[in-house]
Length: 71
Image (cartoon, rainbow, N blue to C red; front, top):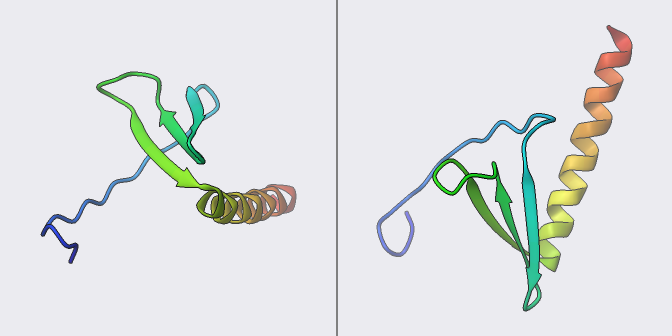
């Protein structure tokens, strides 16, 4: 449980036409995924957190491409 008693869980499907905006400010990358204020997801990452995300997405993309080549 979090310190304030609130736990949030969500999922987002990102497809080719999905708008992704990023702003780097004060050492953090602020992402807006979805392009619409009421329908978007906000994500903030530090440099270290962003590197973890890059590592995970790079691995996932390689796996997806390997699986597509096998089909």
